[in-house]
Amino acid sequence: MTVQASQAPTQRTEPSATRADVAIIGAGPAGLATAIHLGQLGVERVVVVDRHDFPRDKTCGSAVSPKGIAVLKELGAGEAVAAEAYWIKGLRLVTPGDRELVLSGHTDAALICCRRTLDHLLLQRARSLGVRFIGDFQASYLLARNDRVAGFCGVDGREVHAKHTVVADGAHSQFCIDRGRRRLIQAIMGWWEGVTFQPHHIEMVFDRMVKPFYGWLFPEAPGRVNIGICYEDMPLEKNARQLFAQFLDKHYRDRLRGAHQVGGWKGHPVAYASPIGALASPGRIVVGEAGRMTHPATAEGIYQGMRSGMLAAEALRDILRGNAEEGAAQARYEAACRKSFGRSLRGAFVWRRFVSSGGLDLLAGAVNRPIVRRQLARGMAQM
Image (cartoon, rainbow, N blue to C red; front, top):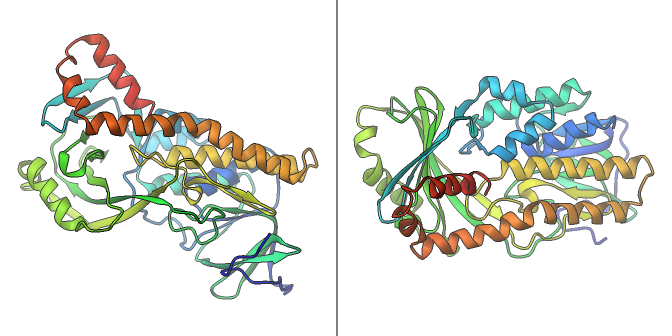
């Protein structure tokens, strides 16, 4: 392994260094799912670091899909999250031609749980399994020993030495392996109180100004919503604030009149790659958005982050117990991620072409047929 420029060439051995079997950089859903599942599998000496202490805010639409809810249950965090979440039973969809559809179900289909709450609940679950958390720790570079990653050093000089390092530091990862061309979805959002909406429904607005992506309204509580847009702008030529203002003026001007904005607008990128690139090297395994495993049509990353974290934990368990050679276990991890997300990634590009070609408006003309409504609702829930 060639040590990257951001890594230190050798590992120091100060007595004060933290030592772990597995050390995880990043305490988002991907890193915490890795830690939780390691605990479920009986792996001890697991350390998670994050640049912030908890609870902390995180810019995110905070929607968790049915597949994400299933993973939360597997992690033993389903009930705790469900108690704090706002449950979704339906969807208001606006097509690029401004046709409106309302798809409602009889059961809970998804949930909204702001990341401040979701991540803190996952951290509490990890701690209950013996995971150690170190907050206010910003990793600066990876440590190396005998051509393998052996931990990392913080900007303040603190070190964490580990047999295996999990990289879960998100879209702007400094420590991922595949440094080829990444693709970005841009997002900008804000929060409001006092906005009217149909209870337990999210809104997805496929306006031509953000085609083939969408704007959204996600209720976080009966009296609070987040509204945002996501769009692709590889040349970085668009002014995000102007675009968002135009979107709000067109679709939410009347409903925002009299509403109270909470805080300012916040933007963030969502990184993805297709196909998924390299996710492991000696001593290192990459999970979630750091490995560019997000959905290229919906920009969802919570489910992919948690599922990849669970798959990484199973590979690490096999390595640490001597049940598999490291290279073979890592290769199986990469293959499992591609299998888990490959079909969804391919479907995302089909959906994008469908939206761009006017398919949503054509579908709107037939949506009064119950079977069409059911298939559309089912397909969007499972994307």
